[in-house]
Figure 1 (cartoon, chains in turn yellow, red):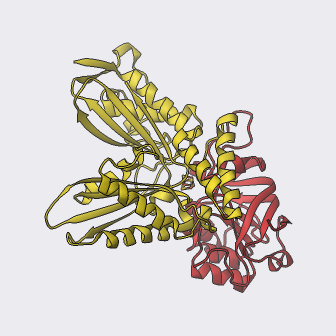
Figure 2 (cartoon, protein in one colour):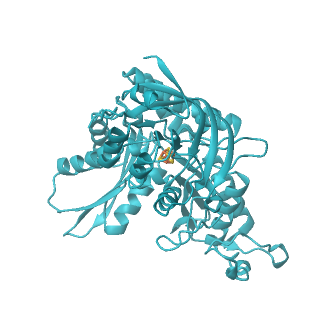
Figure 3 (tube, rainbow over the protein chains, first blue to last red):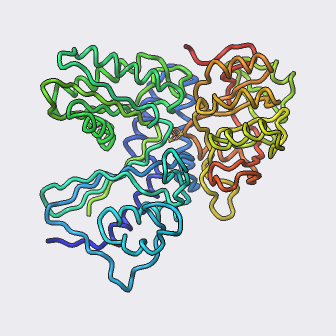
Length: 308
Length: 177
Ligand code: SF4
């Protein structure tokens, strides 16, 4: 068994959150620059320039790329021989409560510095505080909607993989674009074109509200929840990398051209650049089903990874 | 690029009438931030005849919830949030004197009607450029609903803040339908 210290995990998550807030990943910046070079609409090219400039200012002046520094969506792949070493008793300190709000939980805070999920949440909370990121999470969705004050809990997707490493990927996901994501159950006999049309329509509906140019994550297959998860997981990929399966690589290319043919453009004000990339992930599914999910991600596509 | 129209808040009826969808503008003066819950509270205050935290007549509301300011800074990142989430509330504020809103994306039919009926406009600014836009903000002060944190109402002073007229008072829009 390989033990990784709780604090080490929290520290890495903290730094991933902070760097996500301030530094646009290289693949996204490269895609913006490429789009700017190719854009034929002068207004659109100007906006793309402003987005590139925004990334420069964010990094140099330490101002977050966007005021919505996002909900921390964390994909964690835990090697089968990796375990978390909880903090020594004498290093335990009070952490912001990540499981609810209000002081009635004060006593329980100490117990919650134990698991991998606790370490991730501790890192997200520390990143939010030290990185001057926005606290964008409410504890109760419908009734009280009180802010948790720590940007936690994070959304954590965990899987066990072979090996002795721990891979953590964080997507700082904005609310404006997430709100435009959609799911649809197709008939198993649906044609490729039917699915393309629907995805393009989801993007059209997202429109100016979700801060185009987008990165469009698509999940096909699995079941109701797996397709949605895949559409989010697709966003972890480098924008320049195509699906390894030729059929889906071609689908990605066709989707991207169909989406860009919308003419929506940056900020929805017209142009050739409606999306920077379209990323498709798939999974086996039931003979009766063909679930498809589209996750709309904005140009402020903040994804960061680390391997421990 | 067309020339940029300079506007100073509070806006007058004449200012508003002179604008048409697609115009590039720059805003100088005071603007107030408000998002979802703040809008709900402002509308409740109007319904119950309570005093509002700021003068609505001629005002510009910015749909924005900034990140916390680092020590010594005025504000953090401060770009626009999605305007349509405020659609249910904006008509009431427009009827009570609000002259302009600043956000990103589309507005619904009721808002567009209210813009025409009362003479008001909706501006869009660059979504996701919160670092860049923060440079046009020279001061920020929470003036109401402090409990809402990032969503509190802030009085911002801005200089040459860039925006485009997304919906004008004649019913035109910069967005192709
Ligand atoms: S959609 Fe993205 S870029 Fe736009 S405000 Fe939200 S997080 Fe920022």
